[in-house]
Amino acid sequence: RGAIDIHLNKHGLKSKEYTAIATAGEESTAIESRIFKENIGEVKVSVEALQNESGLRISNELLEILRVGKQENETKESYERRLREHALEVLGAKKVIDG
Image (tube, rainbow, N blue to C red; front, side, top):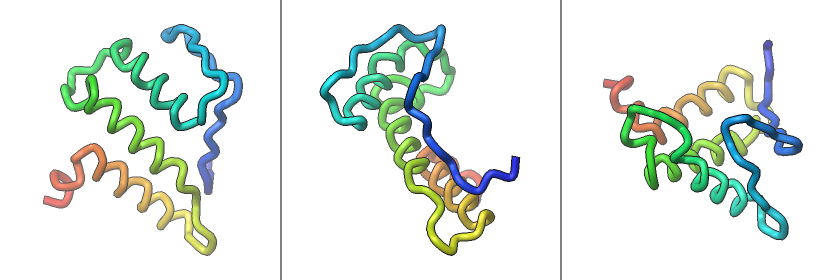
């Protein structure tokens, strides 16, 4: 409620839907990509662009957008707008919304 920043908590994440994956000795981006790749088939979506390699690419790009935190002197509104615009662009929805 009224959050100004997004914090990605990567410790102790658990889910019933996904199986445990060993991750020792890898960079966090490699681990995230591997987890996305190993679990992309577990998620049931009707939009073809969110499946397989395309879904993997979109997942990684959206995570990268979330990694860029609120910039110094950036207002909450401009931060949210920047996140929304970048996410819509990655999803290919910006053209639809902008007309």
